[in-house]
Image (tube, rainbow, N blue to C red):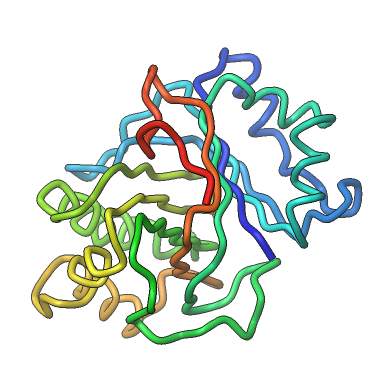
Length: 226
């Protein structure tokens, strides 16, 4: 299994077209699941800041299916001028369509290098205000988080997500778990007490490859191929 993230700044017409429907696994070989969402900066307040940036999070059987998608599919072509990366899972908590069920669940992983995190949720609409308040504090806390390289949020309710890149797994663990009174651990506790989502997953990855840019910059520096 491999995951991919595509992000691009597009025209209003392309944005509306992409948001109309998710890519269909029944029509795309090797695709397990895919979700499209408006991309916004990680929040420092309650209200997200929207632009014409859009994102696609997908899960695949292998890289061959993703190769073919990027070479031939019209949806992939809409992201061609943006940033894209391929991700190999290291550990996961929760469940999501297309995610292998037998991935390690331990918080600490034996991996030293840049790491990516996806948080994915299918939100309970009755919990939307509570979720926005709680997650907003956790997103704002990333501003001072050591080791954060870049991050974005994605939303096409009920689908909500964040994607972030970090210098190391230790940096991720430090932000997510080390301070029990921090915004992220408190958000985890609030979600366990009264769930925000019908389904959710928190997944850490090793970046396998990246290409392209956003606003002239590649969030993983010059790009990688490992």
